[in-house]
Image (tube, rainbow, N blue to C red; front, side):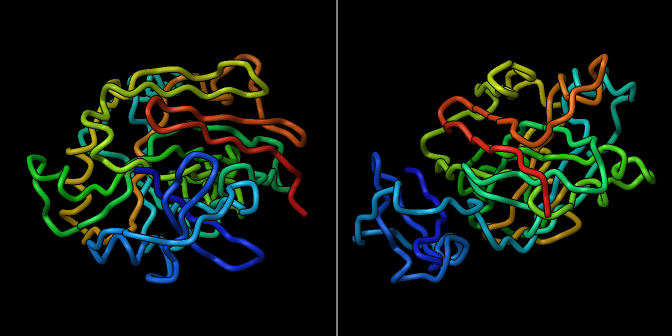
Length: 272
């Protein structure tokens, strides 16, 4: 099942994707996060053409977006780092995200706008001190993410937060694919394309800290709640590591495709 968040004529909703339409269930719950927290099932709703709606980030209002840095061996190598004993974590804010087909915004303050194709894990049941063995029970599903990064701001200090939270710099979508459709996420493949050219390609199995390890570690220090999002890291091939570097700019198109999930597409537009 594919679940998505959207707006139609400025009114927020969510529902189940069925072909070129979405079944609107927002009459029952205010948003997708509330539905995930309910543990309820979806039965009936109005059918809306996808062409009539605007894609919103899969979870527009997460309590937490926790991102994992340098979590693929190939990316660790290209950035000249050493594998850590623990996951390197930072946070994103909800207003730094945009949905599928919406422009990611290149800020005025920097020309170093980089792409990072990633697998997003959306929390369903949640909890505290979740074991690796039970981690899958906490998951609602998976999506694509582009952790757009303002590299010079990211490197102002040892903390990544400033370079990861400019408004509208992260893409999230197009939808959540429920975990019952993806038996083993490590078997998925991820690919990032800039203007049609493949920039990143890797199996999810190349993660240094896999999804159960991340859920167990993160849920030890904070309670994971329904609708929380874990962005699991990017693979080698980022623009900053290329010679010469490759930066996203106004007029570009960036795509993140993950097998069995879909393709997140975002044009790049200069921010006001």
